[in-house]
Length: 288
Image 1 (cartoon, rainbow, N blue to C red):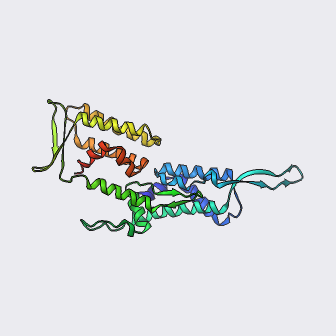
Image 2 (cartoon, one colour; image 1 turned 30 degrees about the vertical axis):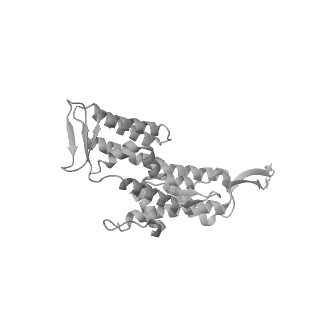
Image 3 (cartoon, rainbow, N blue to C red; image 1 turned 90 degrees about the horizontal axis):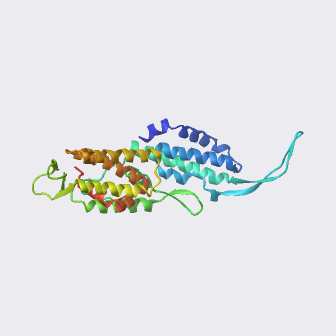
């Protein structure tokens, strides 16, 4: 749960302290303070594993040069100098944005919208921002965008587009399919399903091809250390099962499902489905 993750995060505690100071901020924010804020947001992104938080940083484009007035006392004299600063209005916008975003996420987790009735299609366009954000959070759709002025905002179009693409993909999966995964002639086979259904067979070579597909995609991504280690562990588990004379289907499925969740978070749901057709097809046929 998000609430528990926030309570464990020291970055969240620091962000709360910065938020409490917002009413007192009247002057430009110096670049050093901006850098500190950005470091806190980055740490919170890692703590929550939420790439949406990137958009609440202060971009370099929001900084401008200004003259810092001279300071004179009995011991020293410092003439005017130039320094990069951020306007307080922009800083407050980003800070309020991350505050509202996390608040909505917690509210959605504690009070999720009612699911549709069986067979009833969802009208995404009629949903509120909060309802769309809840759905986006469930399947890790990155839906915060940055405008031309550098400000973060909720992009409903991204959420709806990703949800429609996901619905289209899932509608192409035959729910009556079952799965048979087998090795060579001497190895055991295991099957899920019943009579009069489509049988989709996956050999050990097929699963290995899925593993290679995943490896090819993660090589192009910049993953956090934790995510990289988790994927490496899941892949090692799958390969250990492939080396076994009696591979366990549920272990292979659970490991590949974990990989899918991480890659959907890193790439976006729609892009992950488009880039990993073998993995998605396999998991689609092993839903039950």
